[in-house]
Length: 280
Image (cartoon, rainbow, N blue to C red; front, side, top):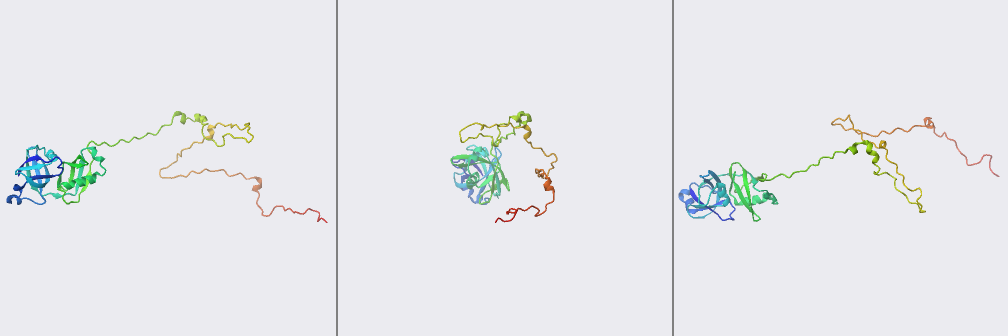
């Protein structure tokens, strides 16, 4: 069947056309129609095709009304000719969409918005650019992939929805800070003598109770570079082995008395009484 195509209303964001009643429901037409009613639209001049459902049969004979975004997919102008065929499509199981603008990422839950908008659609065709209306703004999405076929029916189906990166979207650049290299002064041990500003215990000034200040001024001693202990790398380190390094303290030296063998109760006793007997 060949129809003359016209625009539908501007707010008509669905995938269903308004077609004529007598041609489709004639005895000859009813023999070739399967339910649910799905149609293949073909523009022979541009060799473009898509699929859609039907909204109502109130148009004049030989005329059908399509949404504007569907006519853009078919490269159709108002008053152009379009071929309409009844088809039977497989039920969809998977679909992938690519937003045509990064503004689609501003939606809080884009997957829920898309699933709600697809309730007004009857089928999907790979390569089409569909339009949905949300918060008084129109978002266009390209159908990148559909399974199990390039054209599928989405009426009463359980379909997994996936998104591709929006057109023109750029990943935010991550700034990595390179580790600062030590300066020559920090790596030179000869400059460690200037480290007097570091914390040293008991170097503050004191106050006397009599108010005098004699002999209470601190006399800080500069740090000797030899007192600063630097870590020594373990050159014998092996991958996969953990080594625990413990500080080995020298044993205290024993005196001559400690070298003698200990004998219990070998000390001398003391008496509280004086020698020479009792007092009278």
